[in-house]
Length: 393
Ligand SMILES: *Cc1c(COP(=O)(O)O)cnc(C)c1O
Image (cartoon, rainbow, N blue to C red):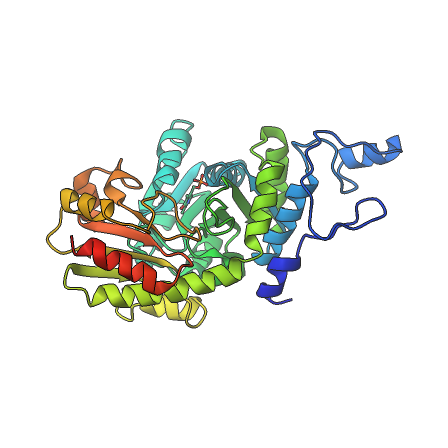
């Protein structure tokens, strides 16, 4: 099945007794009963698939996991209560029987950085940070660190850099390290990292997968070997997604391909318009032929889909001017999330990169005049009109 068909069919229409629901219902039961004790014994022993206790399995969540597993072409998937819970479990699973060392991309989601520094660090896990877009430097960091796991993002926030996942996977393979890829920004519509050699893919389902600003969730998709470990850990720790969120995420994913296509096409229009605006100093967009990673994007992304995140720098602006511009937005939502059906604008220095020291932000190229847009599915004309009136203030 093609991707567009999988999103509406995979995981659904499982037999429940002697009928088949056309969409998966929300199962709220915490325990599951079988007529035969021998069968219950097999289910507890995981010799037979089936729910027994909701920390282990839930039919609604299992349906979502089946769906996302097929979208990312993995061996198994786990839905978690948040993107961070998913990433925590992924790193824990990767390191549990491997050296307690990590190499991570130097630009990653703020909470992911905190997870490595403030949670895994004090537990004895050392992390070396390196630029994944500089393959030689990244490979050197891996050679020197000999990590148990490597963490990179497919599209790095907020400057939207894209690294060569397949080449990093080869580096990971030769170093015997698990490659964990956070694919939240690209979505499986643009990239399927397991196909490129990654071992685990993590998503914040809160973003594009659920897509409507009403779900907190995360998923991990893994190859066979790593999935077994993750599944056992999940059953013990219990960082699981609730059946309500699983239902909403699955419902959201049904339009994922449609939404992302529209968001990407809107983003191309908005980025082109911004590039011609006299008040805009610089636009960062993965569809720009002058993007520093244009060759990688051409090689790894599908044709004509470049992602739906656009960052731009306001000419001669500082924090006050950015605040004023954002306060005058009428339709675009001043939100700290991304990937929703509505367009959102975020100011990295007070949100995603709040805890990064101003000097270090500057070094990363995140200046005080930078804002980030997550483009929605509205009419591109309306997004542009709102930006136009806000930029005129
Ligand atoms: C939002 C986000 C996360 C964390 O996900 P939550 O659902 O907020 O826990 C991780 N990585 C990236 C790239 C994100 O955008």
